[in-house]
Length: 317
Image 1 (spheres, rainbow, N blue to C red):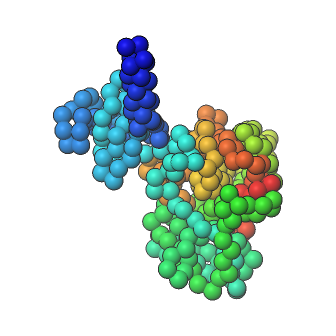
Image 2: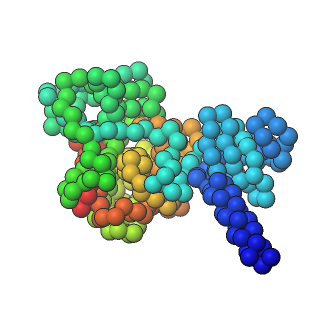
Image 3: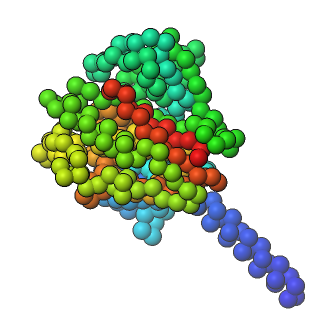
């Protein structure tokens, strides 16, 4: 009798462990409005999720996501969730991020423009990260609403992180900066971006080590070498304006790899001009961008400003 009781207890424990595994949290996310948490998709209401609530996401679906909030577990509309932070980047990539496959260089100087992006002259020496599609390449600009299609380029694919050797480029991202964001102070804004690049360029993050942007670049003041330039604030200008474009570019490069984002803040729900909505990263007196190197080897950050083309690469050290 005791033997069968022991077997029954073991089976119950295994069943409970299996249920817990099924309900393991994949992401943390924020609600964009007051919305209902329901028992089943379209079913009975369990509670109200207030605007800007933090929820634990068990599963993301196209229309409905299974979430945990306080003592309840149920479903809410996926479209009312944003600011996804993966709790296990080896298994769960952030929904809807822009996946890039490698980087390109131009055969000759080329003027790029499209839709709301007024454009810029890209030098032949510029390197920037792209996504492959059919027989060409594309790069998102202007909140991701515009994708520039490229031709006459040389393509270099990223090396997969699993097979990378020292010095290999395993991820990266590119954004564009220039007069269109400058509000009459494009040179000052470019100066701040270049200054930030100089301070994080060739930074090595060891295995299980943490990267903090503010540790390397703050405070954002005149005394620390920054100029007065446009930023996303109530005043619209401030010392260090433009540095957040570097953190945004770095954040999107980090998303290409199984690195654990630790601290990350957005400027605002509506997004910023130079990156897809929900994928900007703000830094300042009250916010930082940090991540943990969860890869089995040290990595190096390469930040490369190129006369309006900002590219951040992540390499195996």
